[in-house]
Amino acid sequence: MEFLVNILGYILNFFYELVHNYGFAIILFSVLIKLILLPISIKQQKTMKKSAKLNAELKKIQSKYMNNPEKLNAEMISLYKREKMSPFTGCLSGIVQIVIILAVFFLVKSPLTYMKKVDVSVINEYKDNIQQESKENMMYPEISIIKDKGNEDERVYINMEFLGLDLSDIPNQNLGDWRVYVIPVLYVMTSFITMKLTTSMQTNIGKDAEETNEQTEMDAALQANKSMMYLMPIMSVSISIIAPLGLALYWLVGNVLAIVERLILNRFLKEEEN
Image (cartoon, rainbow, N blue to C red; front, side):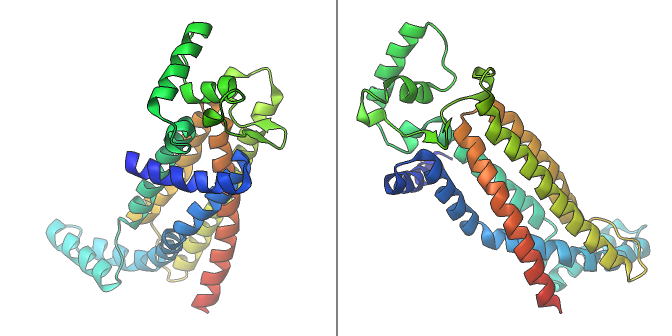
């Protein structure tokens, strides 16, 4: 995990040195990550559409071999191989998303370590000084260092000002400031739009499958995608309340890009089928 976080740190720092603003650097960083993950997104949407077509065949196999588990498993594996499709594709994409979320969380939590590559002795010295002054445990030591010492030492300075917001602010530590809610609220709104688009697409897939007069059931891939659709926003919102706003900005931009991506991919895949 640390290797991945370090790589992402180099990328984020490259964009920061380019624009000299943490917020705009995160936006460019988010776009690049989305482009890197685009093949997985395309594969995921194709899998969802293809799964619907396989459901009718799976239903027949389950009905035919319901009393013969070994034959049932063999026939199902054979069908997936014949159609060049894995029932665990949805799980794989979900795992990749979780790994990226955790990596970005560690990156935003410790930008001096992973982005600016500040020497650990410098970080520890400032951490001890702030600890002695505040007499409180710091949840995000490096964010506190940037806030308190950034204007005094260029080594620990990151321009966190973004459109009137301070991306080093943490919502649950600044409950009296309405501005800390702007990005999390926008994130929640775009999450609902994203879920709506996904639900709508899955409903349309189900309708297409019903034209075969067979009862449609979600297979393992679709179920994994559906579970992840609800799990990811809930987990992300919970973390965004206790994390610096920079992380919520990354997720917000990711949602906006996901909405655009799904609209374009859905249109493209429909044209490809015709």
